[in-house]
Image (cartoon, rainbow, N blue to C red; front, side, top):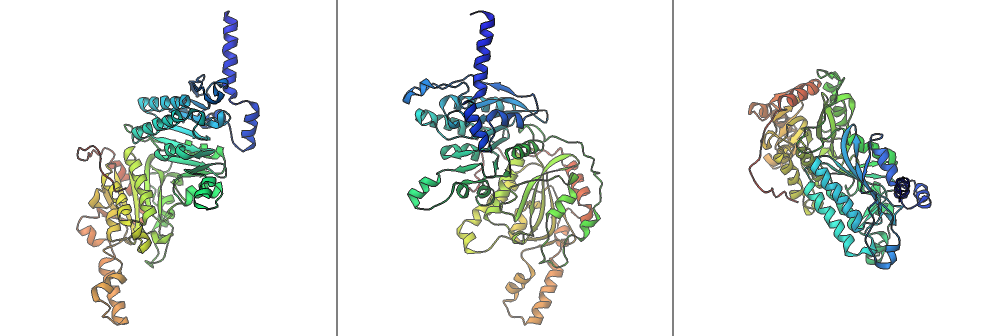
Length: 511
């Protein structure tokens, strides 16, 4: 074969690989409002930066006549490129080739990419669109999944791992995304479930649609499995790019800094009137968040799940922070099973990747009731306590209003390692609210008039930040208008913080 023929042969094989399952299957993919694997990668990465690895790998199976059908790439596209000029590794399952099913060969491709991402210290992004295990390969396919899961676990807290669900993801395939840091889904085209509607109908006789069982809305609002949802693949992939802009490439780096035009000494006078005079009247904590962060740019995580707590990424003076905030506008901002678990995992991510934590507190306590107690609020609430106590990143806390009982302790208080703890003059720091306290103190022995006076006296004595400040539990009482300036000063002061926990293999978080 002469040189020209060799080049022509290479070009033919190359085009065959890039065509995947062929034009007909590509058109079917487009008809389903879905992009191909390569189109998704090009949409996600900076223009012209994608470098493919293992483009010509084919499967090695022989059963059921599959050896007569080999397609270069074998159903997954892998490689590296850049997002915001920073290196990332990516794999994209190709539904046009064997339905994107997992073979031993394409599992090996993903494993190679995982190991390279860890070695180079860069984020790994998976674009999932697969029919699951390739039945013709049996246990080899299952072994491939397990190898991927193993790497997910070993990489956790070392590099950021991001999963996007852009089609079906069922059975064992859901566990790799579940092990990663963030899951993105697309409304109406993404589905995740361990067992599908047909199996459920057979076993439990429940009749449920694919969308209701495992769609983006279900997982973003009911199960809490998904962290972000988009209305289209394009929007979802842009959200991935936005997330990458807030987080470092690995656990040894600081988060990327961005030049900010928002003045660091900006005073926000409107915040002085944001806390209602009536302590039982709700307000929206986001009214504070958006006023104090850079350019009102807040990337909220899990906005539709456990809305009584807010988590997300923002910047102060161009530097990334993770925000955890009670939301008085939803369930009065109480802590419950779902909100505690939601916030705990976010705190642990931020701590693993050197992202400072800013906590805004307005919490009346833990949600009472048999449903919460039987559901294990004790151990689930302890997750958040554990996460904040274990975190060694800078921790800045602002108590805006209520901080009652154990919930005061849990929300990054001074006692569990808060570095700088501020409080507004409107803060109420006590064992419990005035009404409940008076009922216990006087055992209902007071008439109505005496009770009103006792409640007022208790509120005057305890429903303020001054006792805590006198004991050094609050570092400074601040005007709400100064919140941004004070937080930026505290973040600057703590930027060289060095703290290590006691040596151990790992802790035993109450799961």
